[in-house]
Each structure stands twice: as structure tokens, then as C-alpha cells.
Image (tube, rainbow over all chains, first blue to last red; front, side):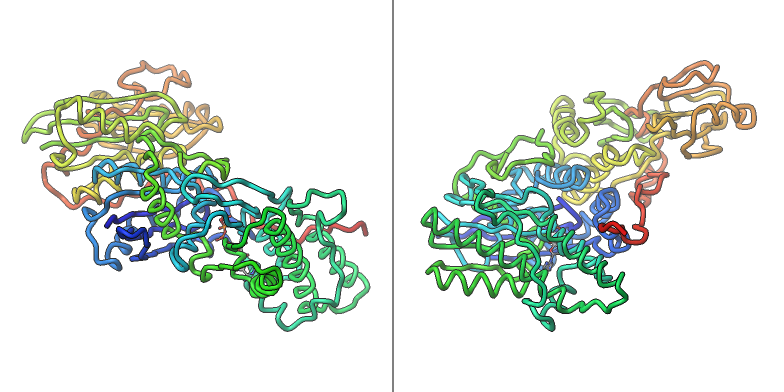
Length: 347
Length: 221
Ligand SMILES: Nc1ncnc2c1ncn2[C@@H]1O[C@H](COP(=O)(O)OP(=O)(O)OP(=O)(O)O)[C@@H](O)[C@H]1O
């Protein structure tokens, strides 16, 4: 039995997770504490790096204390530490990495610099158990939109495609602003969309032409199309049918994401798909993924929303997989790597 | 008492292990210092480990941690502060904050003193100290030329810290906060066994962030 501590600080969430790795390789989630600075960013319409970094410094030790309290564990119970060392915001990552190194030195336990994106995939194993090999991961968040082939969570992850401009969550946040909805834009658009008609407006599906990169995404044109459509209405003095715009925009996002993911699974003959990241909380993306995976005979796994957004439990889970796979720990001169590629699961 | 001192408020990544006797100045057992403004996150914990090893001490033997709280450029400063906070938590030992400029001043006792460090963006962090070593003004952040115009008013006759601007005063003391300076500045609180103050970074600047104005139009009117 191994207790793994996970620390996350790549964006605006300070996360501390505790996971128990049992002898049979199963994971048990013991604590998942998150302090978010999202409210401090709301008036800026997006994450302000310096504001996020300051909040991480304030929240780090208190979040750590809460996690151990919830788990009923002592710091000395920890056997290994995993920390997000990238990708993410440089100044934000540095706070978590520095803290993790100090804890690892004080407690005399191995430290793993872990990939945030791999962590998002690992989150699912906390809820649904080990992943079959290979599986396909659709990772959609405020900072990323990627299709990954996961042969081994601890050692072999390959990018199949990714966004060439905005991330899916970013598109939600920007469209929310166009519609006068609050930040972050995902939840309010999701709610409005449920009341609207997804076929009311035919918004463009990015990179779906015959000569386009088959597994890459593009959401910037969609965002612009929504803004143009709304402005044209406003200029003509007509009312903007917010629910229909939200539903039609959401349909375009869900359509492209799920169509490309299913096509990739079929092309590479992969039978299991994991959808994770903050945008995986989206009701339409989940429903359409379920529908299309069922039709294609693909098993779909989506962790609960709490595990989809940034948290420390997913990093602890990835750490547990690294420990179980016997991966070499990182050295204490580990540093944050803002541009860490997904193929580097641990550093 | 065995004290661990860290500071990352300047380009120096500093860790030191010291003995603070009941009376008199602290004795430096070992220190590790690298001047590299980009290496705070990478090097501080290895420096702590190596300084302890050189001093022949174990982390568990440390009685207290002293941490420079700036002022300093944001990112590097946080590396030291979160490291100190985590060490204090993990070891269950107090972490005493020290204004990093005070630590520089502590190593240049004597006549009234100006201490400056590089705040980047063509500004300096500064504080002034009286003949007894007490801080009489600052810490604050300002353009060096403006500070130069205030020297008479501040009554300082010497300058310590970053050698980045010629104030026309004799230069004394260290360039960066040192372990000895940090522990000297905290000696009274350490000896009294007092509750540590808040471990709050001295940023002295607000984050650069602008609230978005009206939505930008994408269509041509
Ligand atoms: N129901 C939803 N529908 C669509 N988008 C959502 C929904 N709920 C949250 N989101 C979006 O998820 C994003 C936040 O997700 P998450 O916390 O995973 O990502 P992040 O903080 O951007 O970090 P990273 O990209 O580094 O993983 C925001 O852009 C938000 O609008």
C-alpha cells in the first residue's frame, strides 16, 4: 500500500490530492482539496497569470492541511509526491513545483514531475479503474483541446491531433462574453443551450473540409462567426435569441469534437474513449459522445465533473501509476516546464 | 539554535544553515548561493539539501526557518516563500519572515544607510536605516533617479545592495541578502521564541491586469 500526494498549480486552481495505491494496483481517492482563484479572474474575462500565482502561494499550505485533515492522514504517511511540472502558466507552476520539492526533501520521499494533460486522463482511473490499452483520450479544457492515444498512462501517450488556435473552453469563454454571459462561460452557455434550438443557426465546423487535418481542431473561426452573427442582429435592431445562439454554438463544438474523436478511434482501432478536462462537464458533448460511441461500438468513459476540472487528485492518480510502473523519480532540481509536451508523461 | 535561512528576492538563490547562540551573532555553518535570476525554482531546494549536508546537519534538527519576504520580483520571490512555508509545515517548525532589505542592512551596521535592490522595469526597491539599524523609511519601489533626489531628506550617507545605480554614496555591505544577514535581522524574535509574523510577500506592485472594455467588434461597420 502506497500513499501518493498530488499537487496541482498549473492554472487557477491550487489542488492537493491524496490517493492510496493498493497492492492489486487499484486506486482509492482519500482527499481532493481545491482552492480556486476563478472569482478573482472573472472581471478580467480570463485568467490573469500574476493573480493566479499570488493565489497559489497563499493557498498552498492551507489546501495541503485541509487535504490531510479530510484523509485523516499525517504528512509522514506519504510515500511519494507527484506535482504538475507542465504544461501550464510558468509562474503558477513554479509555486506547486517549489512546494512539492520542499515537501519531498523534508519527508524524504521520491518526487515525480508529472504532465498535467496525462493527469487529466489519469483522473478517470480514480472513478472507473484501470484503462485498457490502447485507449483514446479527448482532452478538452480552457487551455487545451487534444486527441491522444494512450498506450500506457505512465509511459506512452501520443498526440493524434490538437487545436491549431483556441481551446474549446476558451471558445466557450469568448462566446459567453459576446453573449453577455459571465466568466467562465462553459456552465452558463450549457444552461442556455438546453433551452435553445441547436439547429437554429448553421455555425461553421472548423477543419472539416476534405483537405483539412483530420484530427486537429479549430475554434477561432466559430467564435468569430458567432460574434458576427450576433452583431449583425444587434445592428439591425433585432433581438438576439440567446438560447438559440448558445445551442447552435454548442452543437458545432460538440459535433466537431465527437466526430473527430470517434473517427480517430475507428481509424486506429481503439475500443475505449476517455473524455476529460473542464469542458467534458458539458451536457451536450457528453450526450453526443455517448450516442456516437454507442453507434460505433466504442466504450465511453467520462469522469464526474469534479474530477474533470483541474485538481490535485488527478496528479496523485498519475503519480500512483508512475510508482506502480516503476518509473524513475525526478531529481530535486526539477523545474517547471510551461510547454511540456504530452508525450513526456513524467520528467 | 539551528536555523535554516532562505531568500530569493534578488537574482541570488540563497540557502544557509546557521547556529544562533543565546548571545552574539549567528555562526554560518554552510551556505549555497547561486546568482541566476532564472534558477530560483530549480536550485533552492537542492541548495537547502546541500547546505545541510555541508553543515553535517539533518533537516529534522532545524529549530526554525527564516525567509526573506522581499520586496522582490514576483516569480522568483514566490519560489523561496513557498519553499520556506512548505518546509515549516512539513517539519512543524516556525517560519520567520524578514524583509529582505533588512537582511542586507543587518550586515552593514553603522551610519545611516540606504539599501536598494533591482526591481526591474528601471526601478529599485529601497529602504532607509538609522544609525541603530532600525528601518526609518520604505520598503518602497521607485525609479533610482527619483530616489537619488531624496537622499538628503532621508539623511543616508552610505548605500548597500544592488550595484545598479550610482547614488554618489560610498558602497558598503553585501549585494544580496545573506544567510547571516537574514538570521541577524530575525535574531531577537528567534531568541524570544515569539510567534512568527505573517509570511506575506512584499510585492509592492499590483498585478498587471486590465479589465476588458467594451467588446471588440469583429465585423466591419
Ligand atoms: N458545462 C460546460 N460546458 C462547456 N465548457 C465548460 C463547462 N464547464 C466548464 N467549462 C469550461 O472548462 C474550462 C475550465 O476547465 P479546466 O479547469 O479543466 O481547465 P483550465 O483551468 O483551463 O486548465 P487546463 O487547460 O490547464 O487543464 C473553462 O474554459 C470553462 O468555460
